[in-house]
Length: 180
Image (cartoon, rainbow, N blue to C red; front, side, top):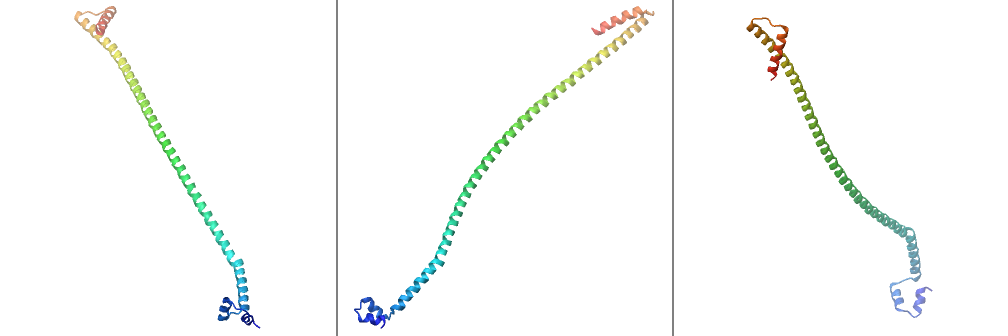
């Protein structure tokens, strides 16, 4: 006797009536449910869980990548800030070097101007000394020539030859008058 006939003989409930109406074989239904449970168990163990594990690993990698990207952004911002500080410091240092160079150039220009002025003064002094020496030589020559001319003129005017003593005395007088 089959289960259907057994159930048909008994008091039949609404579910059983529907099952009888559709021709449900309880043994086949139970065996299909067991087969389905085995398939669900196998799929869950060997397919669904590994896929979920792979997805969880991917989520972890994505979260790690996002964390690394955020850390990289922070490092980039820090590096840019450091670069700005370095550029600012370099600009300040460059301006200081430029100012120092200008000050050095001005000091060098002043020193060179002073040196040139001193050299010019030395040249002028040397020229004055040379001119004084030349003037003194010319005065000596002029005195000698004037004395000679006075002696020649006096000897011609007086008509006599002057002695050495007279020549000396006339030369000294001429020299005194030339100096005065």
